[in-house]
Image 1 (cartoon, helix red, strand yellow):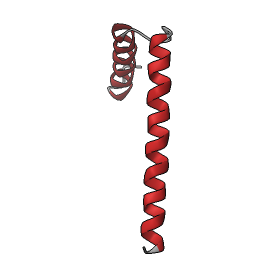
Image 2 (spheres, one colour; image 1 turned 180 degrees about the vertical axis):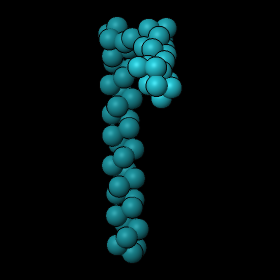
Image 3 (spheres, helix red, strand yellow; image 1 turned 60 degrees about the vertical axis):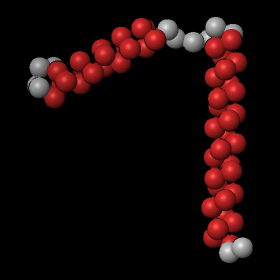
Image 4 (cartoon, one colour; image 1 turned 90 degrees about the vertical axis):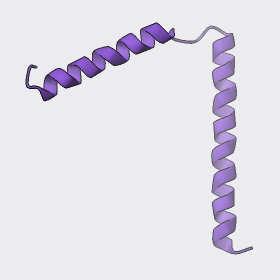
Length: 60
């Protein structure tokens, strides 16, 4: 197998392994109650969007 292909496969496997670890950590956080409710997260995102839109419009 060409070296470049081996490197790409290794990078892909490493990335997927990290992704799986992150998913498992997220599941554990959810089970432990270490989450932000969707409504609270969306309210924060909406507030940031409003600030940025106001800045772009020159209102801040």
